[in-house]
Image 1 (cartoon, rainbow, N blue to C red):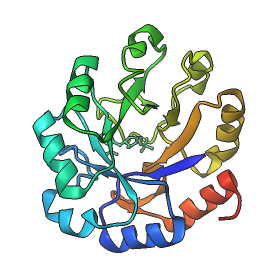
Image 2 (tube, helix red, strand yellow; image 1 turned 180 degrees about the vertical axis):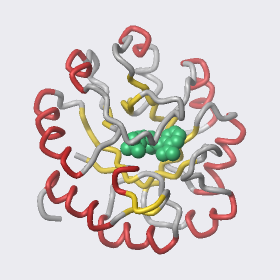
Image 3 (tube, rainbow, N blue to C red; image 1 turned 60 degrees about the vertical axis):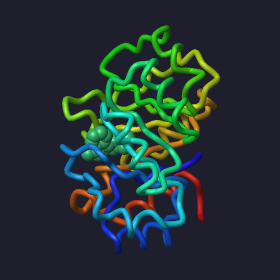
Length: 210
Ligand SMILES: O=C(O)c1ccccc1N[C@@H]1O[C@H](COP(=O)(O)O)[C@@H](O)[C@H]1O
């Protein structure tokens, strides 16, 4: 089970995260309306960090995504809006970076619609539907995932907290396609500043000692 820690931007906090938690991915939010927004001025200090960086975008122009990939040395693009299969196809044609498509879950999931993305993305990422697009700190009802019909791996997100580890491990037994988890607002002392102790506790519960 892999771990992504999202919404990072504070230099000291980033260094602590990388040294003590060693996440598989570090998420940077490039949605201007987010309280965790990462502005271009931070590119110099973040671009050389030794971790796979996931850029989170909401209905952004392809040109902006392409320039941000270069500025921040991103490895993965997380599309957190209503980007269509045609948009994802176009982005794929213009970059070799991996793409994750977020599925914002309200009640039911239209699996047939998602089928159109299967060959275009590395992972789906399931998050709770919210007017702010993400970072709500709320869980959705994970039982909707029990009918997940694809072999394609996915990431679980949305309000995951320190108490979620056992439930996540139970879900992974039923759904081996669950490849990773995304931790964000429930681990924050302030927007964009993560509590390293909370992250350590969660990772121990999820993966054992590390
Ligand atoms: O965190 C944000 O501010 C944000 C804003 C807009 C789109 C996505 C955002 N974050 C993503 O939201 C999910 C869930 O976060 P949470 O655990 O509910 O706080 C996560 O994938 C973040 O990448």
